[in-house]
Image 1 (cartoon, rainbow, N blue to C red):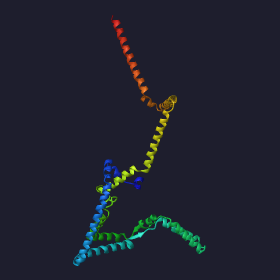
Image 2 (cartoon, one colour):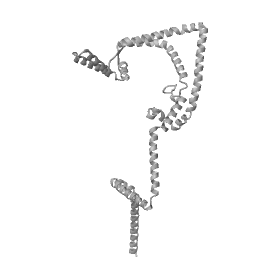
Image 3 (cartoon, rainbow, N blue to C red):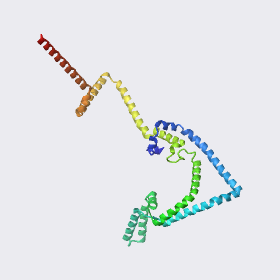
Image 4 (cartoon, rainbow, N blue to C red):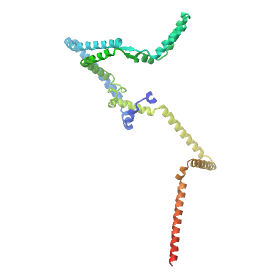
Length: 323
């Protein structure tokens, strides 16, 4: 909820969904929460019961254990040996950690201080070393992790590429063990995380299929939008200003009519001055005024009348000439 208050959520996910569908999904949150907890508890109990039953059958019938071990033991031994070999080669043969610029700079400073303090007692030297180590320890653990693990170089590149080539064939044949382990892990995670709505069991790209997860995110989104502290304080301030304005209006109604008339005159005069200043600064707005339009219409009417009068006078003159 706090992350939603801070705006730390995927806005694209909610922008692609209509507001009606978000509100519709939020209706199911409370029911899904209870249902997922109950049915998840039942599923976990049944899964534990089935696992215990399988182990019981294996212990009762030791021949089954021998058959299973004959099939799976060699594969698991090869799989474990391959991983041990890969770990040892990457740790001691292919990988070389580069010390960061921060550590190199600290070492240079240590050397300079040690060269300057050759004639000082050992106690002072120990104190200086202790101070430097304490200063260097103020760095965060994230920086140390970055310095020790992310900055590395690859040694023996030809041997590395040869090992990758041969490891390709081992992984093709031993991939069945990885598939079995993946299925076991996913089934265990599915059973354990079934009661939780805040965790999608389908992965990042298929979260929209999980109805429980979408109900949870929609409910949290709606709840955050309607209980946001900054939004509530902002609307409360606006509402208080509206109430103050209404109280002032009621107080103005209790004032005498003369004061009301004077206030209206002042408002009208102030408004006209503001209107004059805006029209002087923006001459293009004069044509949009109603008075200006009326003047144009009156001028058009006058011009039309004058043109009609002139035409009538010309006709009378021609008639007289004809007589």
